[in-house]
Length: 282
Ligand code: SF4
Image (cartoon, rainbow, N blue to C red; front, side, top):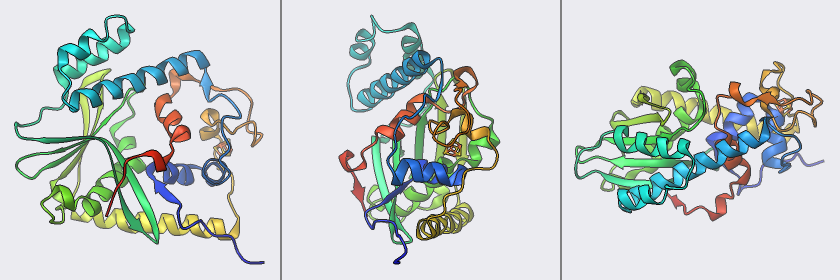
């Protein structure tokens, strides 16, 4: 029998690679079987949905602001919104990462680069191209908890985003390759506006990530060929996983108060239709 293989149109993202890295079974259920929402992820579900909605609203506000809609118009649009969203908005207005005059802003930008025969996508909340040639990737985080800096540094997103920009960002650098050392990434939390997490990039990290991402995508290809997607041994990730009833890993959802991921990020992953996203491919 001919071994299985990934469709050539399959597109990797930090989310799918994070899922594979966390639990190969989750990757299969989500990205190959397209299985959705067999169980709630966290309790209380209404609160998770509320936070997801607030997160989406916050991202939309910032995107509109970046597109040039006046602050006052956006503030006025919030008069009947929840206090939490109004507070996040004020937090953003007063403490967002400072950028020099002349910075070019690109919100909700998707870039991709080929890796091992597949596209690796990165969708930036904001890319700021500064007049001195510095590139800042900003990711707005509306989760209840801010993970430790070391945990954020290990995240797939922290590796994938600067890597993709370094390889696919020539059009934003006058047609020249971007020096990895010119790239910085920030996770910015409206709940903790004075504690942004900054990660510098450089040629060594780019090299490291290239090796890591190539190896990881090869592992995915091998798993598909072998049709081997084991469940994660440590059951901790199962507590917040929507597939736990499917995997017989418990029927009780994890507490929202303990969740460090953003509910809205998880919703995004499931709702995302890459083909509908404006893509810039190089
Ligand atoms: S419930 Fe656990 S084993 Fe099943 S897909 Fe989720 S993380 Fe993997």
